[in-house]
Image (tube, rainbow, N blue to C red; front, side):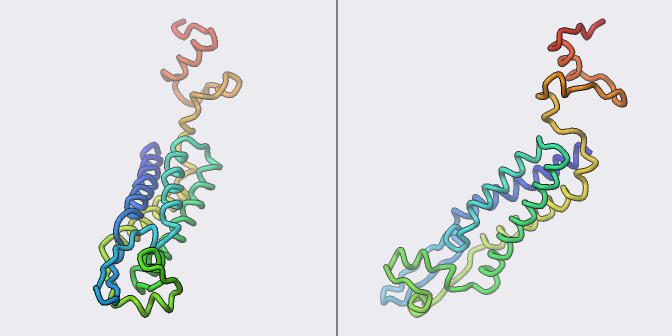
Length: 195
């Protein structure tokens, strides 16, 4: 089950990284009906404001998943599933309905005009780039990694943090062979592992 933990961690890290990268890329090209036909590039962080912080959270969850114990695996899996749901729904709204509200922050910064109705009157056309679809795929990967974690976490081996426990916590399990880490732990406690 060592491979299961690795797959879940890599899935969460990949999804988080794609989300962070996507938040800096252009999602929507907006052409304004202002006489000059000015075109503005709307980044993912403006189209979906929660994209950057929740993608960073997914990265942190993936890193933490590699060292936590059994109970926290389930907690992190549920949190990752919630993040995938929130960002996935917001991304799907942009991808399938292309609302003017997704461009509001960028258009307001460029023109000083605010309000969805005023911005709707100012926008003559909008076109999507591939980044919303890539982000939606990343959220599907995150949801799959979260579900995989919830299904398989019970069968994963002990946490990687086992080697950092104090001598009172690190008792050698008789059901498994004595390995190199156990030998180092014995040496740290003052016992000669070669005898």
